[in-house]
Length: 167
Length: 143
Image 1 (cartoon, rainbow over the protein chains, first blue to last red):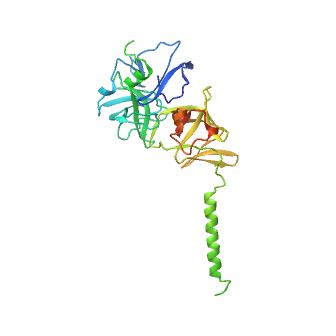
Image 2 (cartoon, one colour):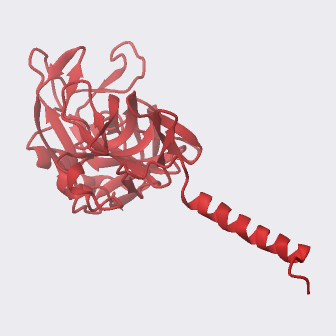
Image 3 (spheres, rainbow over the protein chains, first blue to last red):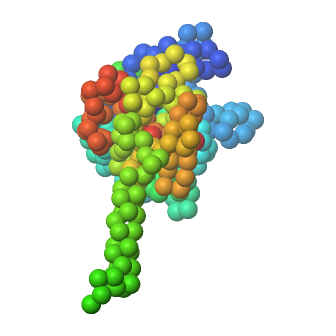
């Protein structure tokens, strides 16, 4: 799964992952691919080393947009800005380059920390093992930026998929 | 008053020089005005996608980003303040701080895909007929 505005060509470990569909309008910016030959698991990359779940964490639950609280401290992983955390400062962002956009996108901020950049899209957002959404964009001066994400319930409803919360 | 007043001649010369300088400023010899170069205003927000190793191609006086993995090409949509300039035989995409890319080379850009029917609402000047028919890639930076 990744963001809808991403290229529709995706691969994992050199294997092409067939494109299945995307939604890029309103409250949605998501896309999914199947993974033939792989076993899909309830893992989310976090880049953090520990002995039991090296560089990933187990996703065991999800929290819809309405249950995500302002000023809560949430974390994310992005391919460019890596692991980082910030405070949920808005739940009503409307990124203008999404057609018919609705003000339902979420914004994480932390003073002096660059939370998002080009290449981070589709990365997971979570506190612990709870899925909150996927990275959509950045907002700021292009150097030290906030992170915008699509809430997990919109990802699921837009694509007709369910985020795995058990193995 | 003398018809050949040195002061009058100097003023005329100065005025003519100003006109010439203004004309030169308006018609930069390295401008590439024949190429469609659409710009958008998303400078404090951007989708956080990435398009890797796409070749910047000039075709029909339009600029395209052609992915090397077989996906269809995108019309490139550039940030406000960027422009296109000729530098010898090259065509350069320039940011306010200098050259950023050369037509014909592969580049990796940040940003995101824009549906074809939504491109026209995001860019200026209007998309000419010859540049239509493809999705757009909203470029937010060259990575």
